[in-house]
Amino acid sequence: MKTSYLALAYGLGAVLLWSTVATAFKIALGFFSPLQLVFVATITSASVLLLILALQRKLALISRQFRQAPWLYLQTGILNPFLYYLVLFKAYDLLPAQQALSLNYTWAILLPLLSVPMLRQKLRRIDLIAALLAYSGVVIIATGGNFAGLQFENPFGILLGLTSTLLWCLYWIINTRDKGDPVVSLLLSFLVALPFITLTLVLTQPLPTLTLHGVLAGAYVGLFEMGVTFVLWLMALKSAERTASVSNLVFLSPVLSMFFIAAILGETIERATIYGLSCILLALLLQQLLPYIKSRRMRRAL
Image 1 (tube, rainbow, N blue to C red):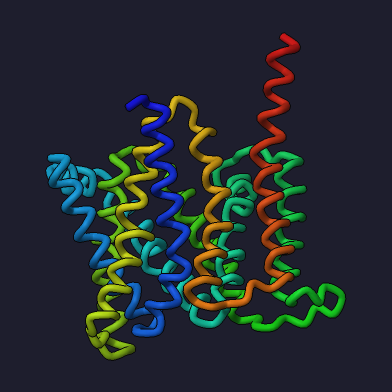
Image 2: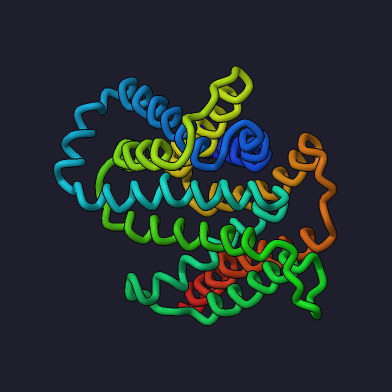
């Protein structure tokens, strides 16, 4: 199979699986509390990543990478999966899936803004324009379209949804210092986080009741949000002749996600969600497209 087709197959597989996880979150949260779901999903994902590394004959890298940067993996593990998924699942517990999903996409807008003070990167004008457009979409979603009244339907849920994007961005910024194998790094984050997740669960809540449907739902989240899909996406990027040809597939995910949310969860997709998500996706598109157009014009001018 040609490399470009292989990359497309991996990328579409990852996007399709990611498109189902918002629905899976809501289903799994019917069996578990947010913290219990983090516990079950983390164990599942860590187990699968261990299996993948065993098949790749990379198990020896686990201890080697950890010894090289234990403090780094302590930070990444606490941020993701512990805090990030705990906050994200709580947001999904409080909000309709369509709202929580839309808010989660603003992390890509926040990341370049945080990179200015934390990574000393230059702030581009397009980043500010994209942020203004995206967070206008957030307000539309949060107010149910009552933009003028600014009456937030669930302010705590909205706050949690936006906080999850902050935690995700902090994770990726800290992760830029990691030069190891990305699958090993993800597994180390999960292994480091698991004792903290377990201790918090034991001290604050009962252990989850493991019914067949609950285990399947929690395992699905661990497999296709945290584990297998990440590996598929890495394989897509590695196989691609041009990274942009694969990364642009991400724009399919929210559209497919809304279809699954409506078809499986039975949520009526609100007009405010469509308008707000459109603003967020337009902001993401502008953020990627305009610098590309500008660079092409500069190359032609030379």
